[in-house]
Image (cartoon, rainbow, N blue to C red; front, side, top):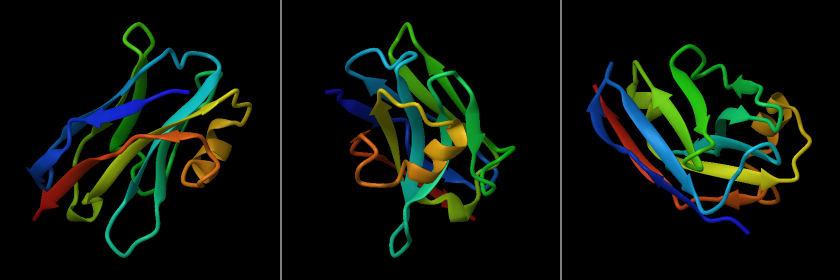
Length: 130
């Protein structure tokens, strides 16, 4: 089992940046698929960015070119750098990890919001004002 704790959320103006962190209770290197998803009120969960067990990444079209996912294996921490934020990015952001994962990064992007994916963190709120 792994515990995930997100941090780094906050309130910013449109065009601003934030870096989210996800601290894991154990190493997620090479045997886990990891990623970020978000959920806004009255909206479905949306997978944003993922890394598969080979280190390949995948991004949703809505954040491609603005968000970057990365992983520091020495710190057991996953990051999401978010630039050029827009009001529609306002949501609760969660990190997730799936053990023994053999999916590609694009497959992870599809499944990360599903209940069966694996472990989720409690989330960190991001609010973007216009």
